Amino acid sequence: MLKDLITGRLNSDEKHGDFLDLVVEEIKKDEPLFDVESAAYFVFAVLFASFETVALAITLAINFISDHPSVLKDLTSEHEEILRKRQNIDSELTWNEYKSMIFTSHVSLNFDRLTALPTNVV
Image (cartoon, rainbow, N blue to C red; front, side, top):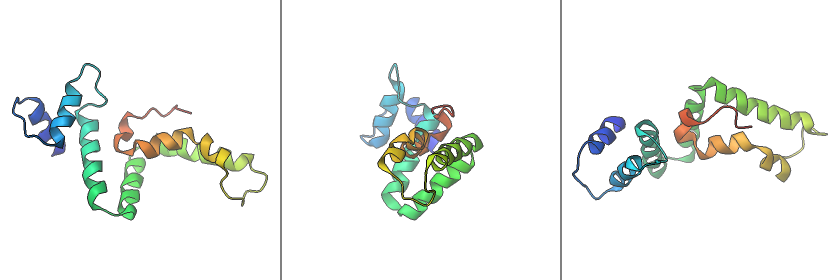
């Protein structure tokens, strides 16, 4: 439904003075940050985040990740590598470990655009 709405706005010169107008302007740029599909995910995430709880946001992220097995595989590999390097597997997460989670940070910052994430970021 959001993709249809965005596509309709793209094909129209009418301005509504809302957030979606800004999204459409971005898509029309020479080097846009996102396409129609990722814009729909972005708009959904913004709407969702403004109305729902953290628990539901986590559920949504897990749902997106489950739709992309290669992302789950890379996340798992990154975290297993951190555990393999530890002297004490039960120790708390360190700052250096946190900073080493390159792929995890990409996923957490971009879960609304999961289909656009490369799986070989790490």
